[in-house]
Amino acid sequence: MPLHAPTLVDIERLAQAAAERLPELFRQHMAHVILRVEDFPDETVMRAMELESPYDILGLYWGHHVGDPGQDMTGALPPTIFLYRRPLLDEWAHGEDSLEHLVTHVLVHEVGHHFGLTDEDIDAIEADAGD
Image (tube, rainbow, N blue to C red; front, side, top):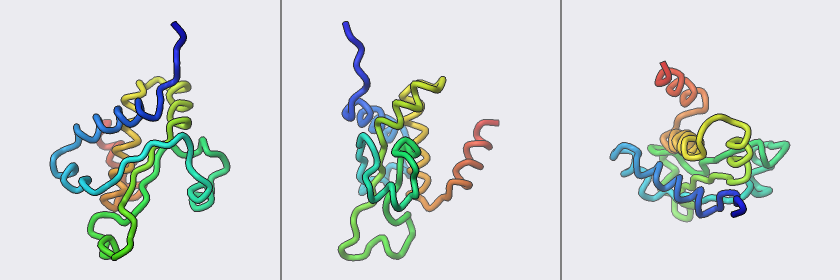
């Protein structure tokens, strides 16, 4: 039986399961956040993030963070967490972690951005948690 790469739906299922394991307080704030899984970032994201390759990003939080006064502006798009399947699969193939662990890690990272944390804040929290 031939092996097939995990699909967009497979990655979305892993991400939804990870989201359901978040603490209740986080889940409450995530109720209006859209979770999207796409193969690659689009050209807008590529330009905005100044990416050299579509493989340079595993996920992205797009929107206002919790507590940002602009989050309730009329006409504002809902906050969205993007996970990028092909870069995730590439990272998974070259790493030692399970795909479930990788998807969970990226999702939690993007949730951190929803709460207004910077990459440095998230890295520091992860480093502290690893001790």
